[in-house]
Amino acid sequence: MKLAVIFPGIGYHTDKPLLYYAKKWFRENRYQIREIFYTGFPKDVKGNDKKMEQAFYLAKEQTGKALADIDFGGYEKTVFVSKSIGTAVAADYDREHGVNAEHIYFTPVPQTFLFVREKSGMVFHGLDDPWCDAQIVYENCRRYGLERRTFPKANHSLETGNTFEDMKILQAVLECLREREMEELYRLIGLQPEIVRGLEETGMETEAEKQELQLARLLDRDTVRNAYEELKKQLENDPDNLKMLYCQLECARRVALKYEERDIPKKIFADTMKCFTRYIQECGEKNGRMYFDRGWWTYRQISMSLFRIGALEYEMVDFEGEKVISVHIPSDADMGKESVDESFSQAEKFFERYFGDYKFTKYICDSWLLAPALRQFLSDGSNILSFQNRFRILREKPANREFISWLFQAPETARTEDLPEHTRLQKSVKKLLLDGGNVGAAIGVMEVRSGEHE
Image 1: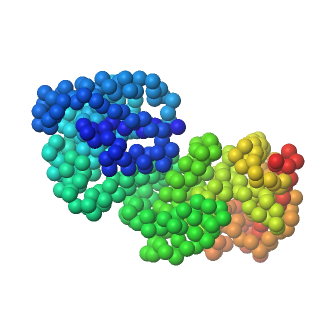
Image 2: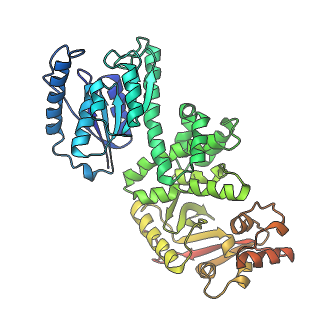
Image 3: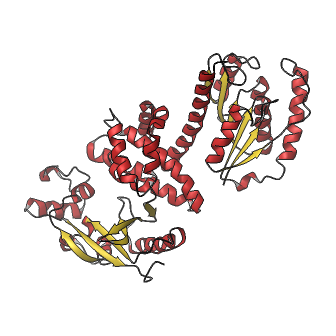
């Protein structure tokens, strides 16, 4: 559970645009909301240091009482959203109580910077704000490592007097809130810094709204395939597919809320979405540079069709007119017998608990690891052989060459003579290829151990 605490300004509560939409945004993103209400402020505080001090201590006292019952340690994340004098109160409360909250400082006052914690959040400031000089904001943001977003001609309410400009400011504020959540996702999945920089350069944080229809369809298993194809057509000048990556990661951010609704553990979400990082790394190893080449696959993860549970991935699919679970083997999977056993065991419990209406009796696997041609190169204690023995082969695919990219981390078009020979299996398979043979792939089936998932 995440918590957003709203610290209002003097006469500026959640009925006013900045805090109204901030509250709405955090609520939509499944934050528990706690609002603070102040009373008894003196009049004519602006420009009067004595009255400002009086108002601060009054707000501080009321805040202490309002938050006395909160166990901040019970929340995975806490955000303090504050406005004007509320920014000083929020920063002071955080410092005194060690909450270590993330802060959104809307139009701070000079006194705020007496209490702020280094690198604690983001400041939004209007350059025509009469309550706090822009130079004070600039110098203190640099001093304390605070992110800063400024708006020309905007006042203490981040308004300019021009309705359309004010709406643009509100939109920019909300985009900043979304980007902070995106950055948290990037950290969670360990996205490569080089790719993060590339995403920032695409400008998709402002363009994503134009694709809203397709983004919504990407979250639905019934429409995700068509949505991906349509989105691919609409995203122009995207040679490294970073616009597509941004759109899919935005969907990953949104689908995290669906995980929370079902109470699916965050670890499963993180492990599932780390596919993006893994695929980009594999692309770099195979092609000499990193870009996003798996958009045609990762829409399964963002539509909650596929989940990583332990060593393996599991996808809900229809196979020959029957609902089954398709098993996929990530490149970093621990294929030891105990690890695979545990993964299957946890998968059955997972679908039983979170997708109880999805009835299946079989697992299928379509992989080069099931190819019968591999068996000649595998010892009795081989993890690959142990995995093969779990499945009954339905049909072979002798001409398939996908194994080249997985086994050799090379393009399927690579010359056989150039394939690496770092492992015994690579050496054996390369010799097979040079002799005119092939590994291929196979489709296998395994019955659910408990009989039927129901």
